[in-house]
Length: 357
Image (tube, rainbow, N blue to C red; front, side):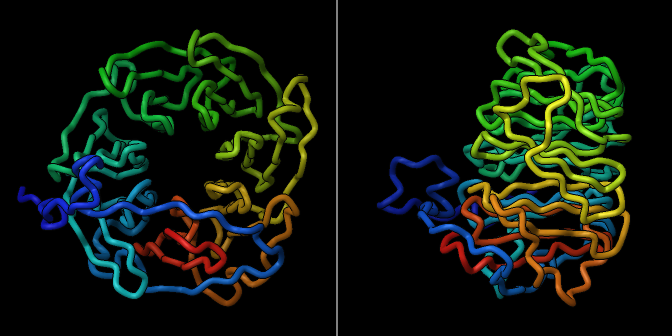
C-alpha cells in the first residue's frame, strides 16, 4: 500500500512545531462567532463528499470530520474507508482502503488527528488507521467482545467503550490496548456517551435507565430514568458540558441539563417530539448552538434545531431529498455539516454563519 501524496508534502517554515501530519497538510485556526440566529439556517449545498468514489457502501454509517485539518472520513457497508479533502466545490480523494468482509459502523479520529479508530458490528477486530503512514492495522478486541454493537472512543483519546449490546460495557485503554474494566449495568445497553471532559461515562439502558460511571474509579456514581422512554436508542453529550440528549425508539428526544441530573426522575429541559420513528443519530455542534436529530427508518427524517431556543430551522431540509439519513456530523468550527444516507452518499453543506472549517 503506497503512501498518498498528501502525506508526503514538504514541511513548511511556519509549521515547525506542529506534529508531522499538521506539517504535511496544514493547520486550521479557530475563530469566534456571534450567536446563531434562530428559525432560518443559511447554508449552501456542495457536491457530495464521496462523489469521486461512491464505493463505500449503500449505507454510509460513518461520516467524520478531522479535528485539525479540512479532511473527512467516509465509510459504510462495503468495508471501504475513504478520506477526502473538504474544499466545497472540489472534494478530492486522498486515500482509501478496504477492510474485507467489514460493515463499518463506527469511526473516530484521535484528538491530535494522527489516527482513526474504526470498528464493525460484524467483526471481532477493530482497525487503527495511521494517517501519517497511511497504514491500517487490525487489533483484537477482548475475547468477551465478539461483535461490538457499541464502539466509542473518548474525545481525549484515552478510552474505548465497547459492548455487544448486553448489560456489560468494556473499557479499553486506547494506548496500551488492554482491558481496564467491565462495567456491569442493570439492563442491556443501547448506547453510551462520554462527558465532555471524559471523566464520566453515561450508559443508556434499553428501558431508559441511565447509569453514570466515574472513569477514574470505574464506580457507578448515580442512576436516573429518561422520562417517558419505552425503548432506548441513542445518547449524546454536548461539548460545552452542560447538556445531555437522549433519543428513544418512539422518536422522542429529551434534552437534560447536567446540573439537574440529581434525582431518580429528573425533568427534561426540553422534549422534542418532531420525529415519529426510532432516533438513530443525535449530534451537537462544537459550540452547542445546533442540535441535529435524525432517524434512519423514514425518508428525510431529520430536524436541525437552534439552541437555546430549540426552534427547528424551517428551511432545512426544505425540498431536498436526503433519503434515509444515517449520520450527521459537524466540522470542528461548524463551517461544514455532513449528512450520510442509505444511497451511498455523504452530502456536504456550508453553514454560512460559521466562518471557518
